[in-house]
Length: 314
Length: 144
Image 1 (cartoon, rainbow over the protein chains, first blue to last red):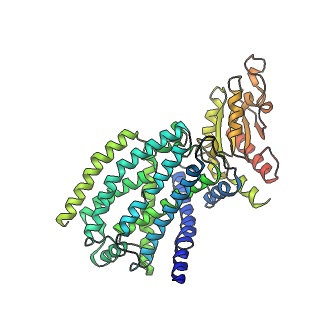
Image 2: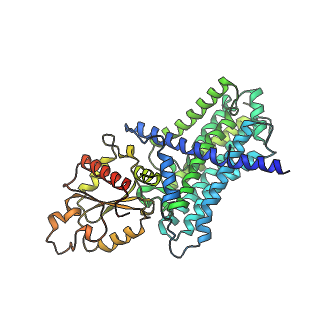
Image 3: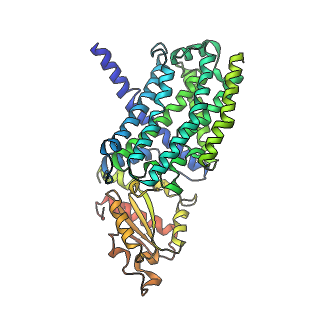
């Protein structure tokens, strides 16, 4: 019993949990900044920049708490979001490392856990007694309501294509024997839908109105400083690391373990990541009503089409 | 130079505070972020909220209406925080030295770490000032 618990704690805290995901997340965040800089013909920051930013906030800066806020909610929500993001990353990487582990329905658990960081951000913003933060939080809420429907519909397609299994391990194993989900027409449409939904989930540019820097000054995070801000940034970094892993798991048959497979998986990962960054850098920010219309109209229709084609067996 | 100074000097998030400037210095701030000068190489990024900032770029002549806001924003900046003044107006009230509306130069209102003279200062001057600020942080001097 005790060794089992120690093993789980190691998985959650060291590898592939908090420490590993955090370091990888900050590295991936640097890739984001560097690719953005290169797309704008700039040089960009050195590779350790995100580590410096994180250390500065976590250890050396003052934490200010605005007057009249609930300290428990204001300081508790960043920890909640970070815990959920860490758990998502751990579940995904453990399922990729050894597909026979995991439990029945962990895809659904991952989908629910991915909802917690935006909710934590929203609660923290509402708790911070600032009108701009409230505005950001209300936008975050609307955005969440809009992308969640097509996200779940898109998630259904890999489940249908892999013999209706709701275990990450079985989804990976099925794709190993029957070919990747993305190779089928329904899988390709579903991948496209998922790509746009995760863009909104990560708060990347066409859908970054919750924290629109130029109009509502960082929106949801406006009152945060020091350690809680570092936690929010780390949450975002871990999600940025974990979400391409989720997409590889669902559409490309997971991370392979042999030599050629690792190269293939890493290039798939880099491809998805760079695709997201390029979408981020080549689009202007849309208004929240445009985003809701987009997700509930075209994207939901596309997701429905992909579900129907998957049902028909294509 | 300890780890703290090394970290603080290479990760300076900047808040842009304009207190009645003519927009010239403000445009130069944006110039510094363009491909030719690219301050992000040194870890300098513009942030929207003063609570995320490590340094304030103050432009403008600090007129009477702006003074309470400048003081309040300085107090809201999480410490250690630094102040860099831009342009002739911020450094010495410039053209508006004898105006009824500018009571005092900015460094008599809040502590200032670096001055960048010029109307407006060139981005090269800004990078030189940032270099001095970095040296100052590493030598554990400065108001922060």
